[in-house]
Every structure is written in C-alpha cells, then in structure tokens.
Image 1 (tube, one colour):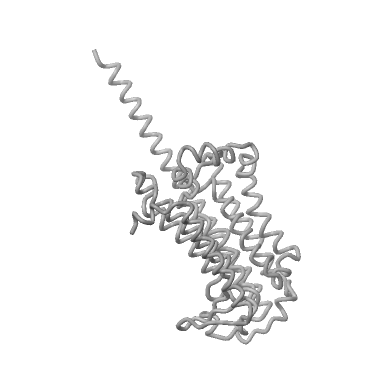
Image 2 (image 1 turned 135 degrees about the vertical axis):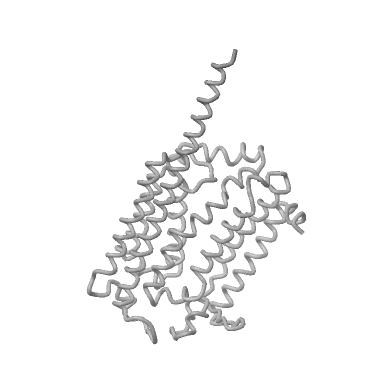
Length: 339
C-alpha cells in the first residue's frame, strides 16, 4: 500500500484533486441550500444554518465549509505522498515519522479549530474566537513547520525541478526580503491588532469570505513568525541565540496588549456580538472579558515556554561548542607531543 501511494504521479494526483474539489463544491451547495446531516451524535450544517446555541449541543455542532476543509486535506495528502516518495528513495533519515506526525497534527488542529465543535459559534461568543486566534497563530504553525514541508518539497522535487521552478523563487531578492524575521514579527503583531481595532472583525461576523480570510491570514502570520525559529526549513535568516530570545519574547507584550484590549473596557466593544441570541453561556461583557483573560494568560504562558526552550537550546549549543573546542585543543596537544 505504501509503495503504491509513493508511486502516485503528479498527473494522477491532479486528477484526484479535481474530482475531490468538484465534490467539495457540490457538498457546499447542498449544505448552503439549507440541508444538514447528523453523523452519530454530531450535527453538521453550513455556517449560515447554525442553530441557536444550546448546552450541550454546542459541543457537537459542526459548521462545515467543504472547500477550505478539502484544501487543507489536500495539503496533508500532498505532504504524505512526498514523504512516502522520499522515504522510498532512501532519504528516510531526513524525514522520520515524528515529522509526519507533527505536520498532520498541525493540519488536523487547524481543521478542528476552524470547523470543529464550538467553532460553529465563533460569531456568538468572542472567547471562542480568541481560542481560535490563539491556536491558529501560536500553536498550529510550529507543528506544521516541524514537519519541514519546504525541505520535503525541495527533496521530493528532484534536481531538475528545483533548479527550474523552486530555486528561482527562493533565491530571489523579493523572497529574501519578504522572509526577513522583521517582517514576520511585524505580521505577528499587526495582523491581530489591526483585525480587532478596525471594523474588520465585526464585518467578518456577517461576511463569509472575510471570516475565513481572517483565519487564513492568522495562520499565514503565525507560519511567517515561527519560520526562523523552528528548525528544519531552509531560510536565509539564521537568528543568533540572543536575538532569538528577544524575538520570542515579543510574544509576551503582544498578547498582553490584546488581553488588556478586551479585559479592561466596561462596555461591549462589538455591538454585533451584543445582539446575538444566547440561550446559555456568559453575557456579552463577561464573554469579552473571558476572551481577554484567555489571550493574556495563554499568551504569557506560551511566550515564557518559548523563551525558556530557546534559552535551553542556547545552553545546549554552547555546551556542544565547548566540547568541540576541548576536542580541538586535545588534538593540537597530541600533535605537539608526538615525536
């Protein structure tokens, strides 16, 4: 089975992709026509047909958008096929099973965050949207990058495709400037701040394209920010350990600002959320304050964990460098003492 999957050609994959995409479009049309389905105890519907939030049904309601789900599954399938191809070609040492597990976990986490239980009510409860925001920009991107998708693509593409298609892009000056860590840090800070202080978030509550575009933007900003920190992917910018510590420490003030933005006001910031029917759960103001507390506490925790991990990596690097220096000095002394 693994050998057959590894032998799938790009043409066959493209044909299967077109068939799957057509099926996703048809399923989208079926759901948006007002249809729904119950799979075991899970209720599946379109985002526009979500029933009023009732406890405990909110934990088993899935507002499905088949096309974005299909695109995410396509990325997972493409990764799996490339991983099998590289492993079959004798490069398995570069891509152990844990990298496959990390990438698949990241994609699964994105799907569950955007379309899983409770996500159907991210236009009713602000704290649900805060959890989604936090996962998409802080937790899912490192998992995806741990799979080394860019390195896998370079290896699986082969020398000819690398030279003809990939290297001209990755070695270009615009790509080098765009992948600068300063740009990643700016996106990580600017995307969520502008999303919430401008009308963009409130508009997204009633606009499907903007709603899911915001999810994609958060995930993109997160991947861009974590790229120079998570190893395994090619990058022009290798951050020295002291700079990496400062880079990661930016997680703390950014999330602290966002947390205070929602926790401190004594009035509801978004009137559209205040008028949503709530048959259970916190009031609009308490909901907003819970969202701010989530952003502050989880942001501080993840930021400190990341800084501690980077400091530990710095200590290990210094220890390895000290051992190399000791070995070099020992070799020089042995050569000097030799007759």
